[in-house]
Amino acid sequence: MPHTTGPTATTTVSASASASVDALPWEELVTSALLGTDRRPPASRGGPVPADAPGALLDAAALHTVRRRAGLLPAVPEARPEPAAPDPRPALPEAARHRLAHLLADRSAPSGGGRRGTAPDLTELIPQWLAIANRRGFRAPAALLPPLLDAARARTDLRPQALAFAGPRGRWLAGLNPDWKFALRGSASGAPQTDTTDPDAVARLWEEGLFAERVALLDAVRAQDP
Image (cartoon, rainbow, N blue to C red; front, side, top):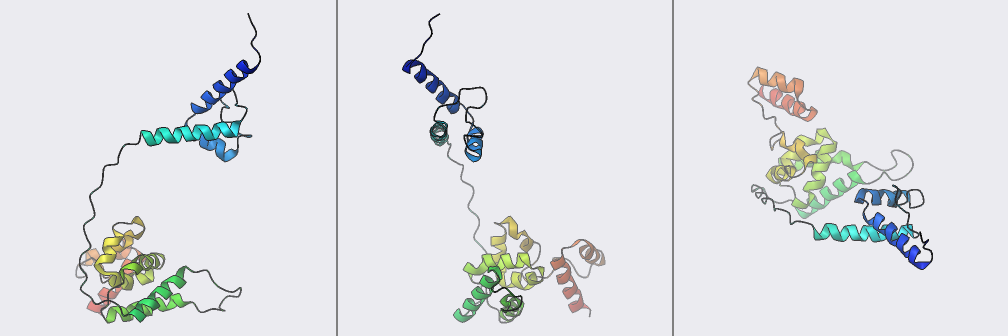
């Protein structure tokens, strides 16, 4: 039986190794890329290892990418969400809008300085700010609704005032983001969606409700019967 050596044999082995790399699933290529071709050669499952393993890996990844793009089916468009309900409340004055943006930005900013208490914590002013804005009947600026809902998500004590200020557009926006689903559990004013004249419903919400819902329930019951 003749023994083949030389460039022809080398080319055959190289082509075979490249073919074995091309046949690997995408997950195997990703694993090789993350671990490195030295630790995890792209043809480590019984196939020949190509001489240029990193190059073969990149070629195989490019080939897979073209295949996936060529075989991609157009997605079925989902129904467009209904528009938010109108909010007839007047817009915030520019100075008040700027102050709210500053308070919400300070909430997510890292603490400055090394010693605790060297800089004032402006987030403690948010409840007072929201109470005044709600008392005067302003609506929340659309651009500040996401950070406002994030703040209410992190601090349950803010939720009644924040949801009242966010209004119908805030509840509409919360329906599009699972992180803000808490906003769908209460009414626009932050009051509980429970008949406070029904003792069984009140007891059930008090025992099973979220902290913010129980606070709102307590406020509603005390307002009704101090």
